[in-house]
Amino acid sequence: MKLTQDLLIRLQAGERPTAPELATLLNAQGKACDLIYQAANTLYQRVMGYVVHLRGIIEFSNVCKNNCWYCGIRCENKQIERYRMSQDQILDIARHAKRWGCGTVVLQSGVDSFYTAELLSDIVRQIKNETGLAVTLGVGVRTRDELALIKSAGCDRYLLRFETTSNALFSALHPDESFLQRIRCLNDLRELGYQVGSGFMIGLPGSTAEMIANDILFATELKLDMIGCGPFLAHPDTPLAGKPLLEDRSMYYKTIALLRLLNPYAHIPATTAFDALEQDGRNLVLTRGANVFMPNLTPGKYRTQYALYPNKPDVDEEGEECVLRVRQRLLALGREIGTGPGHARRVSVES
Ligand code: SF4
Image (cartoon, rainbow, N blue to C red; front, side, top):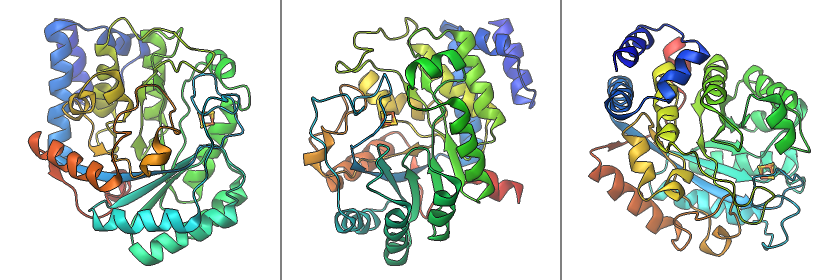
């Protein structure tokens, strides 16, 4: 307890912890664990004022050329029906997102070359012109030229998770990509003027508190505008089927709390996977440092086919209902719903 208190005081004073110190915090139990949550929530309240931003997700294609070991839409999974949404379908949902009060749409897909940089640019341009919403893309690793073209169409943000800083684990889980490629892509995004989001999967098989501590420190070093992390949940139609959750469930939440403490101004979503981990998991994350909620706007008929992990919540809801429920949920938690695009705080704070 005393050790946790001392470490938290140093963190709150802006001191960068070592990986072993962070691992100690990740292993904290009982009251020491609560202290970490409280510190993260207090900091979030001070910096963000209890505001939660809504970013509507549109999962527009579940086609992926990659075969990541943990992912339910990996190309070798023949148990799902593949779909692609048209430009008009995507635009139509974005128009609704505006009406439903989202400040941002997040366009997410597998690594699908059908959506060329030209096509993605057209989609982004149309959304920006018609709705004025902020646009975030999450479409995997792309070349610098492609990213530059999409940026010139007005794209605001890009999400690309590094997933783990363990080289051995990264290579074992990602047969089609290298860690360095992802970092190169993240650097390109930053240089091209995107607001950059990344993050990692908490509790991948074989990971330890020390490894998670390294992931937290690496995410912090990247000076990210958004940090998205979710628990690893073994999908039954992948080679990692049946792999267990972390024995200490609180470690998932302490990871988010520590990310907040080290990155006061980053936008940190309560990722959907927390609701798959346990009922109302996202509520818990929102009281432990997260400040973004991402209602799913993907049409119902596609939702079950975009199952990156099992027990995905809200698959039987349509977009409007989903946003409405999210609003009720946030208000019940005493949160205020953000207006406007909710751009990167780091940029406005540092400029
Ligand atoms: S994690 Fe991403 S890149 Fe990997 S298989 Fe799934 S959608 Fe494709």
